[in-house]
Length: 283
Image 1 (cartoon, rainbow, N blue to C red):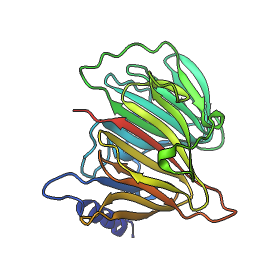
Image 2: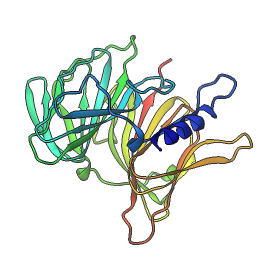
Image 3: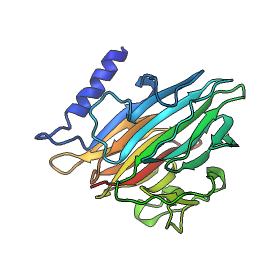
Image 4: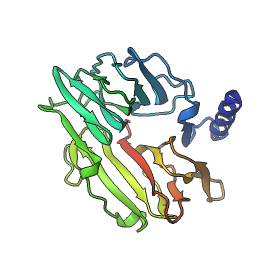
């Protein structure tokens, strides 16, 4: 059954190749992604490569080096890692644990988001009973960019970030603006070089993220809860291409792809939520 599912996913992806061009999007369901040995893999630690490093499907990403799901069982820990050419973001999905940031131990809990600068060694460990689950994101830094040292860890929790409506996306979607570039004046953390925006979208009952495009950016959506229909590209006659999605599904969107979402939650149900990250194109 799993092989059939993977074959269907591959056919969907393959069908989007037009005259040798890369697909406009990639779709993954976390349940179909197998754990692999990775840089982070350690005792009782499991990493699923959703996109990028370790993913066996065609590599079409530009500046995104990795996007994966990390789970650490009770008593487990990752290897210590350090990257000289990429910045990383960690988003804690569930559980509590400890982040070793250089030589400093920092408690982390669900809904924490953390910026890991270029050249900083880090690891994660789980001394608790419940499994620690996180999304690990990595973004390549262009060779011509000079990276300034980051003096202290940048960490916050999404629970303290207010929701707001952004007019161009419609009134039924609210945004938590979590992290942006060092020049950002709107995000909770102004930290990044390549990442333009890390944010959460909360959809009212039957809410819509109005379809739109980002000409010079890549984007990844990860469904935190709920479901609906994802807009991913358009047909030759200009119609939206919609795909059913559920919790723990993920989409990668290439630059200039039509992107949107239609929630199917009903009155009394928890709102659908999506974790999104948008990053600069490397040319």
